Image (cartoon, rainbow, N blue to C red; front, side, top):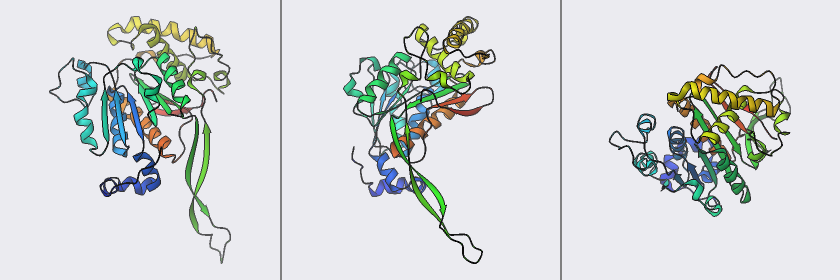
Length: 333
């Protein structure tokens, strides 16, 4: 996809970020067409940040209807929005107001109804609130045409993202000293571009759940079992089995279901000495502050992946609900 030269209006609007990451990176962003699947609490935060970055187009795909919770959690909806309307259409006005220079398309069809060719039209696909079967399927489709893919979700105080940017080249600015010293002075400092590469595994080697035939050998290479990674897998399996997120109104019942699934995950991966008891109470709802944090991280990864500027996370980001800190984890590589 060819890069587009910035108009004078774009150069003025994006002046501060051009100073931050350079005109070449901004032109790459200007050429990017992004698909965002899911425009709930997390999706709205991702949309805000990537719209402000100055991409070419954003397609919002969500076949869902607005609920009472959406009116509380989604700042792209207005107070006058009615429950039961199509959420993708109702967020359009406020989303467009964030950046009138970005083309926004809304699509209310189900993600499962889309053909492989639909996903091939994008530079990067960003997904939220879908089940693991769809995650793996879309990732495989994206790999056919070198379309980058990142998925994320929020469950209460816990949030995460997992990326497949395939063979990703990037440039990183580094400060170097020129050779030689004269009269006790160090050499002059200069900024140089250093090229790097990260090879991402496909997500069917990363997100392996019980009752599948995938080999867990890549995941078992983890230097140390992670409570948060086990929690991620447990929640994906819960959604797969029950076709929903854990429900606060069924809290005690759902915690027991989570414990049973977690035991299967721990056995599958041979994650000995893991104890997730402190996490179960924290996995209910879609909390706005956590959506803001995870959405900011995911949008930042989209910007880095599209612009090829600075090092991307390889390949999992985890927001710890106990310490309120972010952690990076490499799985399957």
